[in-house]
Length: 479
Length: 104
Image (cartoon, rainbow over all chains, first blue to last red; front, side, top):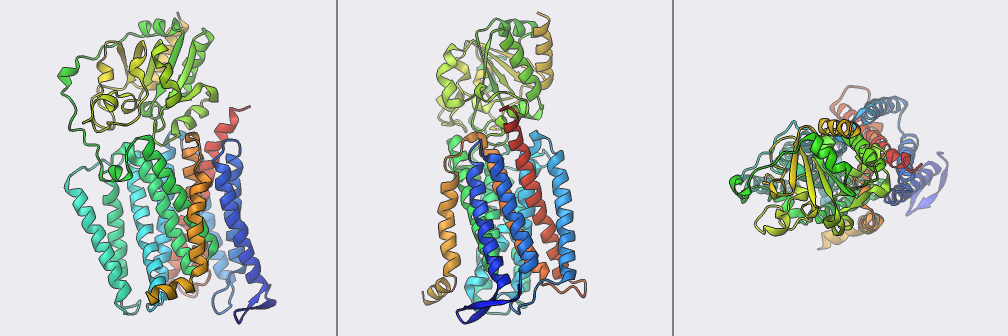
């Protein structure tokens, strides 16, 4: 492998270097093909496998063939240390990934994103002393890697905490100004490091300060954003992590890292935009946070919520022709997807046409509801997308809303001042009857009242979604 | 201006890759059905763990004769990056496995 193959631009290169670069090309192609396959249901699993294979290949060849500028390879002691570190990371990551419940998937992804961002920030931090201060371009990519990686790390940790219920929202008007101020400091500090012309050693304090401020910015950036918007935030931070990795790739002149990172950066950005579009909101609106819930009408004007008994609900459902189940976050937290499928099968066996209406942002992430219902073996054909089910709603006998709120709130259509105005919703209010399963009388994530719950045709079944469904299934069985 | 041109010329290969990858990333996932948004996000997240290569290079050439800050921080960088990679791919596979199961 140390055999010199030829010269390029006056520099000799060995077989090992050529093979290493070739393996990076293969890895980069595997990333692209993997991502492409992952966007089609039939090939998705294979795509994930390809991307993982690309990563493994790049890791192995780097370990075996990488040489520093003096032409020294990675020594045995270093190889051992690296393998041990990889071993620890793999075992911990694997166990966590295997144990996590499907409902907790979004926070898991957020957590992994945080670790990736932190790794990028640490690599940039360690590479800074080697930066050539006269080459502002190389300093710039190092600083970008540090800042973006740190924001991705601390932001993702807060997103993780919020989804896990460990961190509460902090909403205050001045937060926007605090954040803008921090962002300004970050830019000024980075610019100072860039143009000062001092050695990296002299600039060490500034770099650590920049690291600290970026971490703080990540925290405060995510803090005011409502829990319901976390999917968008995670997707955005995911693209940040990709960009940070690409910046590190720039430092090392490593094409596989650049391509992989930018690929994720671009794909993540598009995914973020798609998610925002599903909620009919702009990214800026999500970040600044329009969800305040100030303009909601007073509760008194809405009338009262009417409860339904289990026996009435079971009779109503059993003798319907067409039932549409509208699942939401409440179903996910209660882990009621299996019992929900049982209800659906029970009703189907009685000749009822049961379908699921899936709002694009139902659950905790776009497509999260599909994953959960897939886990419970609900067939594909029964999952109908919002735009396809809405024309059928007036002919639906019963719409069963399970733990969903904002996605069926008619205020989105007819109250221009509402925080969710303009968001596409499932037209549950057009169904002949509506049964709403809810834990309590509380509001949805947008923090506003839902007129649907007070409607003439609406009946409520209070309680944890799983318990309510279980009781309902028992009741229908005993009919 | 001169500086920027020098910088561009020095790193032209990398800049070309960045420019083209942006379009590639957008194109590759533009037609994804919403069913796959969550797994795709998770899979892309695992790919962003490619920073592990940087970690390997860093620790690979670090001084191991003494227990220095560079070595320790570098080791943590590798551990975190591996968490991202291994956990990310395994979680994605678990999600996708469910889609497959019910198509029997």
